Image (cartoon, rainbow, N blue to C red):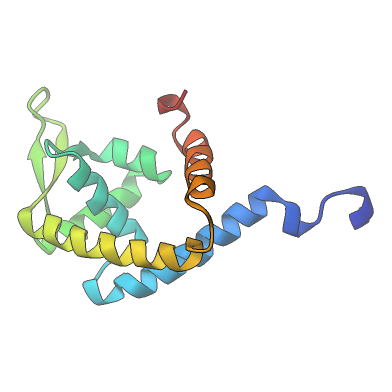
Length: 148
């Protein structure tokens, strides 16, 4: 199809979102390597830190859009480093929750600051209103059940 009959790749939102996500993930990975983290492990740690009572692996997998089996290895690595612990859920002791340790919370704070600096480098030229709209629009895509 000639470009005149359709939109160009530079106008394709799916491509732009995918490509920009890849660029940001690569830059954040590079920034977090000295902490022994990558975007995926950082994300698991962040979710554990956001839920003081802990978060189950299935919800982590659903939030991250990964198969639960992929989460197991990420949690194993974080647990081996003493950044998270698996504990039994009070309501169902067969269900394991991922809980951040104090060391994990400290590392998360450092990683979060580093990731924010990377994002700022890409987005600092945009007005805060535009960033708020972008964030809200993306939240509607990623978390459709929790946005109205």
